[in-house]
Image 1: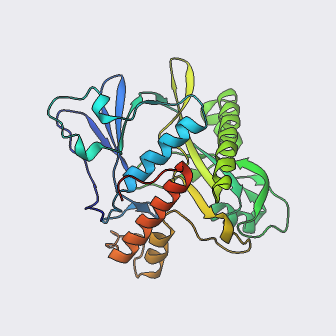
Image 2: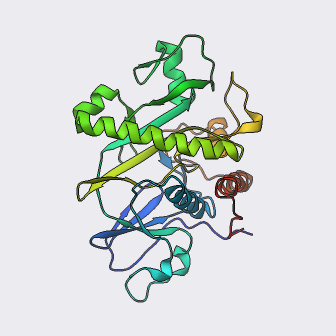
Length: 297
């Protein structure tokens, strides 16, 4: 049985920046990233966590960092091998903490879409485009696109909305040469991930990447193709024309949408059945993608 969700970590004497999901500790030239069990929806961090969610995100990301074989920020995944201050309780960090290189973060969310869903579907219905990229007429919701498209967004601070932007705007923000390289790398990584995911029965509908620069090198950072940063659909249930069942936090979104929450005030607590079903979906996705049993069942 799962224990209580880990919503916050407290490591004494280490500078901390708390994001929506991750607690980031500054170790000087390196960072300690700890994935909590916090869950966000509709740009709010919910008061109820999903037990072991942080471990799922960490295990899935670590798998992809090795699988896609691209330069990335990962240095160490075993907490017993990390040079941490004496006296820190390592138990809460097991399976959810990684030691990474510190980088100058590129301030763009690098989104790749292989299927027409979410905000992309809404824009297509109105304008026939996604983030300004023209698409063929007559597509349905959840249709596979003729080829993956790159649709960048600005990186929002906690509580703010990410903003979809055009590639031209991205070029203005970070320079044309860097923008072109980010687009090329993002699509290439997505294609590698989508191929593996399909082989294990998952459609990687879309995902987002983050990149950083260190010593003149552009590297993949943060997380990679997790249920938090992606839409994962069961391949055997795929049917264009409507929204799809998913391995991500759809149970949470659906419950919140059906509640009387106005999405502008503090969100309500999640009921136990929604928490458990969401946890099960996260773990199922982790086991399918990594091909290994989840150690903390």
